[in-house]
Amino acid sequence: MTIRPANAEEAKRVKAIAEAAYQPYVAVIGRPPAPMVADFQAAAQAGDLHVLEDGGTIVAYIHLYPKGQALHIENLAVAPEARRRGYANRLLAFAEAEARRLGLGTLDLYTNEAMESAKALYLASGFQEIDRRLEAGFRRVYLQKDLQQA
Image (tube, rainbow, N blue to C red; front, side, top):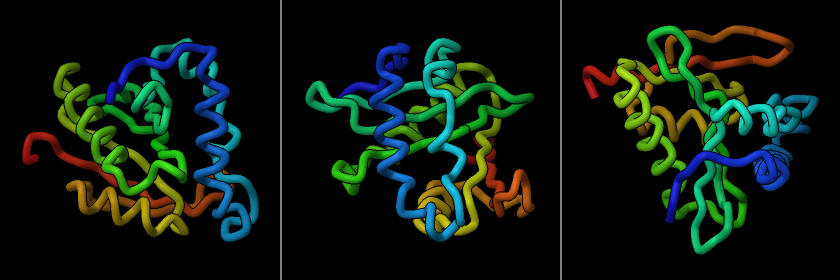
């Protein structure tokens, strides 16, 4: 298993993972969640997109970048057929290591209020809810992890 920067050609696979992972939320939210329409090619070209490859197949990804004194996780998804194998936790550990490598003391992210399993994952990983707001038509929950206390 390897976590590495994605290249622009892999953006199609990442987009396919995002579409499959977030499709169940379209009916709940009333429109495609933001990750389903993200520009993964631009994220890859910027060096902000990393893929988790297992057995030569990309099964998950994380889009992250520095934002102030935090490393912001824009999106993380695991292909539905690859769930429950610890990939999301490995990507979160990777994000934490990246933040430390960059000298950043915090991880932050947001998720949709309707995505209960995502919120549960982040809370179990040491994130704390810091805010909720309606933004761009989405009901978002903002979470943060202080790496000084982790």
